[in-house]
Length: 492
Image (cartoon, rainbow, N blue to C red; front, side):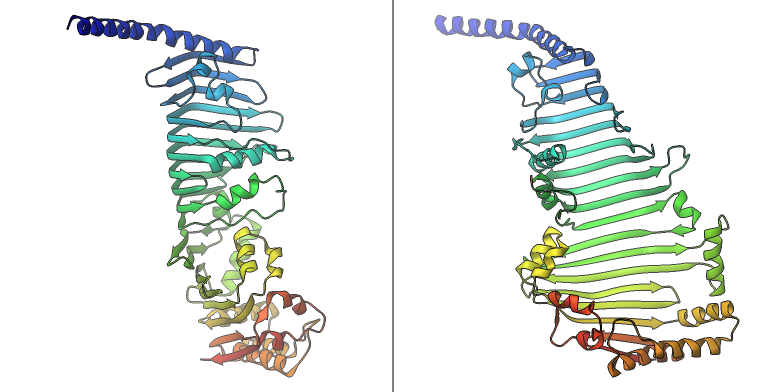
């Protein structure tokens, strides 16, 4: 019993001595870190705090002139997975990090950051950055190509996971011009190696160097399911060069709202929202939809360009132009097809233009070209256009356009209409074989000018037109009508 008591007393005593020694060890580590950062005269730090129990480092008023000029009001990392012996040597993640090193921290905070690179004329700053659940896995730092910083940054982003990130007031001054691009706030949730669950950007602005208000501004951009892993893989490769394919960006949903700025107001342009949605129905089938809503053109009397546009609209009897765009399609890899089932451009009370199409026999080469973003590789594919349809439903656009043209020529509308229809029927495009089928097609368009209604132009090539035959369409004396199976019909 006495031995147990004595052992307990000894353990408590040792623990007490160890605890009592912690402040001294922390002060020693802080002093070593400060000395190591300032060694060589290229950097200074106002204060350093180290917390051994919570594995925390705090740097205050850090300034560096090694390369770019860097100043950080406060940098703190807690829950840091960084070797203690490295800290005692004064090597911290911010002062001694090397490409390829792993790094984990439960929380990282930066305040009042500014980076100025006078060699290229860039200036970047942010008010605050907070990251929770930071986990950078070890990655390959060896790179022998000419784009080392880009490649290693891409590899780091592919190896990085973040549970939550918040950024406040980031501003970047463009090299040379001094124009600025800013983001008021950024919130990222669950980023893992190039895939982010959600990203929310607020207050994006582009401002001229001496401008008082933004040239262009977007109030909100929100995305979910953003996937840039193919892009990171492309940039990480030593074979990548500018102009090479960079891969396909995937997103489940993205929207942008609140468009404004001097550039838009100068031309009287306003825009409500842009939305992109992709729904995966199965492993092979995905549906996508893109919408542009609330586009309005109402030119003010501020410049010669906007005055000309306004006068043109007035000749058509319009005070403003309102338009919307809605396009949806299906990608079915199981059936080797891509379908554009609805792609409509609508001008309120003017006209609606709708386009549909189907591509068949989409083979592995086709999907590889799509996924890699390599348009040149499409020529290795046997995918083919099976059908396409363009429908123009006139509401008042044709009549308004003819009246505007009649005002400029000084002729009656009836004469203008007849002349246009005649010119369409006589049209002989250069480098195209003039056939009876082409004459029938042009006659259908001419009758649309004469009568209005709904014009439908169909393309039904037989057999389907494969991608490797597209060059034929550009050859002299090509029979486009027969090759594409073109026809025109008119309905009221």
